[in-house]
Image 1 (spheres, rainbow, N blue to C red):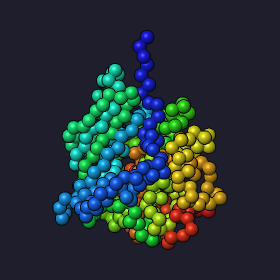
Image 2: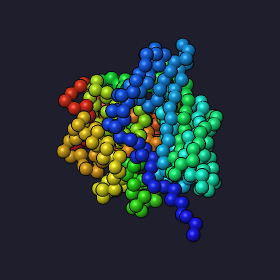
Image 3: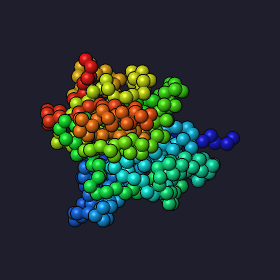
Image 4: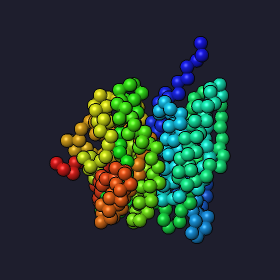
Length: 346
């Protein structure tokens, strides 16, 4: 009997190592001599590295790859590539080149690999980049992603920790991706919820980033495996505090029901354990909403900090693109906790 190929065992950004583990490992790495041309490295837990090569040119370098979180290989390739490309946009750059990173069982049908890479290549083209090669290894499980190079002006790089007191926080995609994918794996997700999750995961942040470029962005990150609150913790960076308006956050509606049914991820619980000491939830913030805020997102949206008087117009521009932009919080003076989660409309 022919062996059945189990393509999706659960992956995406839920497959990341926890932030606590990573921080301990990174703290042990030798740093070498400082290079003044390295504008952003891994010290600030930022989305990508930035190296200045000329007065008006900086190179942005990133990579990302993970196992499948959906059953269709072509769709997985699109999602993995969209996620990999996202870090360039989170830094304020333009995608230029990309290289495939492939782990694939050589005994499997290579048409599956072809479908994965086709999906990825199409997203690189949509991003305006050029696929220039890559590297593959024979492995027991499938993993796919991209190493991506982008360019930006050194003075226009978005760091993830440059927010100012009074800045509004704008989110450009819905939360709940990890919970919906978990529900799908056990046959509990509706087709509508999964379709919405896939549409979100395959939407490039290119379009939201182009809208942001017209404004005075102080900080930006993309919300991925460490969750909304985990990446917000990195944005605050121990320098500020912030308020989060839970009732303003765009979410996939069914994710609330799935969270109430405890269709959760281990990665979400790691995110909670790593970040909860920095967060204070108001009493009226439900368990389901808390879990959505700790939920690992695959190919999530941009989280942007910008002046309060520009935030509403940015949201209008994002919504005009058909994206679910919303003002979801604001930066405040340092307080006892970094993050206060409340409802704007009580």
